[in-house]
Length: 226
Image (cartoon, one colour):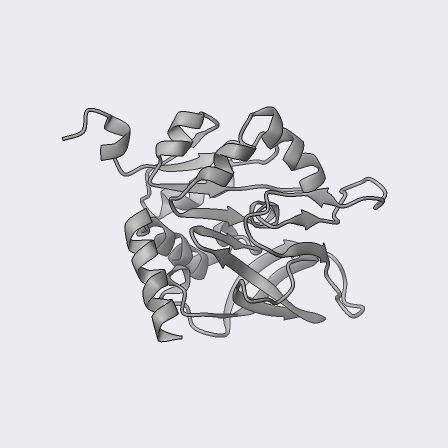
């Protein structure tokens, strides 16, 4: 048996990004019986079985916080399952035009983990932010095991990732957009699973079953069947 206890224990770490109210995400995992820890400790994050990247607000504010905590290269190096929630998903992309309360004069570079960009949702005149319950159409990715097309989840956002080869689930509000995206071990959801009742709980349960090994195996099987 390894002498490093971090490699023997199944752990789930919610990254303390310094720019989000993490309580609701932590409580959502605790409601499904999951043992989670909120931390910005690099060693704990690196050795976790799985990692959650939460966030609220804009990438313009969040990315400097990650940099100040020396977490950008740490997150990029992770090989275990990583779930981005809301802004956490958006930060996984190449860039975002969301500037928060600032004038939109520049594009904010993000983590570059998933090759897509975040820009304003074209709501076709519908009110922004897109707030409330909306339906999703998921793919067969293991994050959405047991989730049927037409299931309702809860959104609060004005910016989105477009539909692309990285889309795991799609939704529509004025235009079609990615409700979830993924590349390799990095997955992100635009909606709030912690506010999405039973469907959100099932998605979190699916994530909690993932390890580096079984996710890799599942993705290879999906690719072989395509």
